[in-house]
Amino acid sequence: MSDLAKLFKSTPAIPENMPLLNSTDLFDADGVLIPQPASFWQSKRREEKVCFGLTHGLYAFPTTELISTVNRMIGGRRAIEIGAGNGGFARALAIPATDNHQERDPKFARIYQLAGHPTINYGPHVEKIDATLAVAKYQPKVVLACWVTHLYDPRRHELGGNVIGVDEQSIMEAVDDYIFIGNTHIHGSKPLLKDLHNGLIATHTVAEYVVGQPMLQSRAAQGTEFLLRLTRK
Image 1: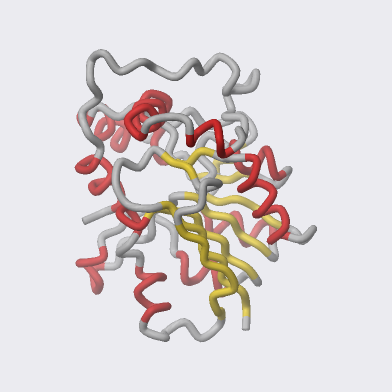
Image 2: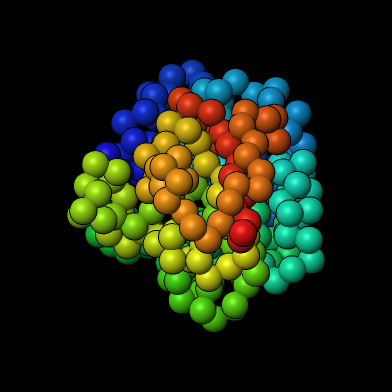
């Protein structure tokens, strides 16, 4: 099952009386999500966060603590974000934001429409470019990826993915650090995670693995948020 299918299947119905978060101060003038302290999101019920993310086409929510942590991991090196979506993480980190803008493709937009899921509002600073091409263009030392879907491989059909997803293995091999932020339920079947578990990743090792900390916030209705940092051996 693909990440998208998992997300659609696991997103609960929103009660009609569910109050929407007052989003007036949560976005900047460009409609880009502004990082909030983790305590802000902790004070919200899971249903509220699901509703907020669904309403605005958002998946992971940048927190000030998470931005500080990722900035420390980057350590002043050249970095980019792939699959940046709305672009809140990249803007807060002052790094290039890139995305293939898949959800603006009429074919994919129709899928989201039928599922009742609004599409991403791509920030004006989010460059439309494939992840692999973005790495080739910017030659980063560090790549940040939040909630990106992996490339579908028919030889590993059971792991799901997307036919225009991210080839994480090739991207990781081109950089020193690959930082992935995701959810155990939505992203648990990633080939990258399977290969790590089976000792099949020869180029990188796990430098940091953070699970369930308050700084990690998303719209996920199930599972636990995590951050995985892979560093070249």
